[in-house]
Image (tube, rainbow, N blue to C red; front, side, top):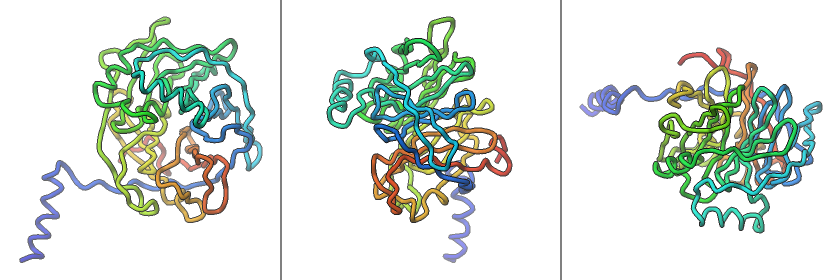
Length: 330
């Protein structure tokens, strides 16, 4: 009788909860890893492929961005000086803005650059978590802050996002034309927002928020199977799809550009969480994402912490694309 009841429950429960039990995400294969030398503040927090060159930022360096020399196994970060004007008031509370200022003294990095992206012309865009703002670093000329609408922060906060210090915007992506921009709110709640540019004016068509989500997930067994908040760590655009780096889950997900609905996910846990690559820190450290035809670049912000094998430098991993490609259906 008990065996019969258990079998019945296995059949009935998935339908009761709205569908079949989710299949495990297929695993990506790591091809290589690259330690990065010469980042002044360490803490690699974003990656972008700009006209065939990889660029990165550190959340501890307000006045530098880096072009990566990838000609050898160990990469060199070539610093490029930038001078950002005073950050605009995006609508964050006085408390959050004050904490950003205080972080300059406590750790360095008042602006807290957490992502970098670029358009087809090679202009780079940096998202500041400290001020919920986006800095444009043009190919030539001085950096300027984008005049994003106040509705971006207002609508995000109205839906429960951007409430906590160090949990503001964590990822950024822009289309090749440079007139549509996506931002990722990190956690508690996490979410995705989009703004568009018409001539020189940025605005939201309808709602700025296209996705928001609360709740927790179970981390991989190698991380202790702990329950942690769902999060986003970076964004990438590829072939008309939005890819999210989901740090706590150790996975990359492909999402619809308009609705942010998940279409498919891939795990990178198996090859990233082998014993010699483990950190003593109890949370995910993947912070940066680039997607291309042949694979994914994933950057690791180790917060100056050493891995089990003693490596203390920032790391970039190369994973092969899925065997059926990034656009394959389930």
